[in-house]
Length: 330
Image 1 (spheres, rainbow, N blue to C red):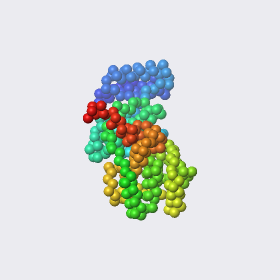
Image 2 (image 1 turned 120 degrees about the vertical axis):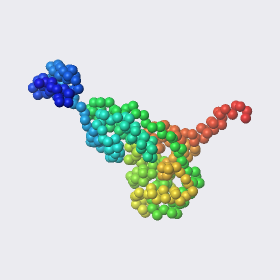
Image 3 (image 1 turned 60 degrees about the horizontal axis):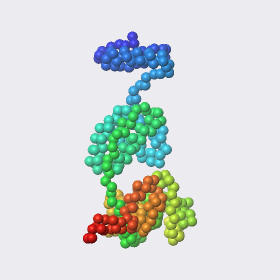
Image 4 (image 1 turned 180 degrees about the vertical axis):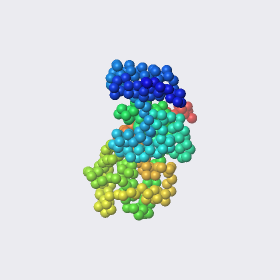
C-alpha cells in the first residue's frame, strides 16, 4: 500500500510511481501523506529526473570537515581555523548543521565572554563559521540559508595604540644589547622600527628579501608582498648579523623579557606590536603621508591606517585653529 498508518499514529508514504523511483516519508496526518504521494506521482510524470531531496542531517563537524577538504586547506591559516571550528562544534554539542540555533550560539558566546574570551576573538570565530556555510552553499554542498546570517558581531572597544617615544626606544635598545642572551632580538627590533613590519615578518626575513637597500616581506598576514626601503647603515648591519649569527630564530620571548626589565609599560598584548605602532606614529608625526603609510604597513583598507591620522601635526593644529574658543576671544 502507498500509504499506511504506523502503530504510533503517524502515516508512512511508500510510493513507487515508476520503476526505480521509490519515495518513503513519514507524516503526522493522513492528509499530509496523501498530498505528498500525489505530488510525487505528478512530479515524476512532469519531470522523470525529479526526486524530493532528503533532509540534510549532516552535523556541524561534518560540514566543517567538508569545508576544509573543499576550500579551507587552501588558506594560509586553514588548519588553525579548522581547529577553532572543531572546538566550537564540540561546545555547541555538534548539532545538525541545518538546525544550528542562533540563540544556542549566542548563549555559548556569552558564556565564553564571561570566561575571558575577547570580543575580537569571538567575532573572528563567528566570521569563520559564517564562511563555512557561505562557501558550502556556493559550492552546492548545502541548499539552505546560513543560520547565523543575522547574528551581529560583538561591539569591540577600540584600544589606544601604544607607541614608544624616542627616549623609550633608546632605553629599550640599550636593555636589549645589555641583557639579551639571544643575539637576534636587536636586529629584529631594528627592522620593525625601521619598516613598521610585524615581529613575525621581521623574524622570518631571508637574505633574498634584502636587495639594494630595500626589504621585501613575503608570507605576510594578508598574503601580499610589500617592499620598504631602509638606510645603507641598517642594510650593512643586517648583512653582518646574518654572517655572524645566521638566520633569526624565535626571539619573541627574549624581547618580552627585555621589555619587562625597562620602565616602559604597555597594554596587554601590545608588546612586539608596539614597535609597528611606533613606526607608524613617528611616521605621521614627522609629516608622512597617510596613503604612503598604508602601503608601507600593507593595510588592505585605509580605515586601519586612519587610526594614526590624529597624530599628524596639521591634524593637531586644526584643533587649535578651528575649535570654538578660536573665535570666542578667550
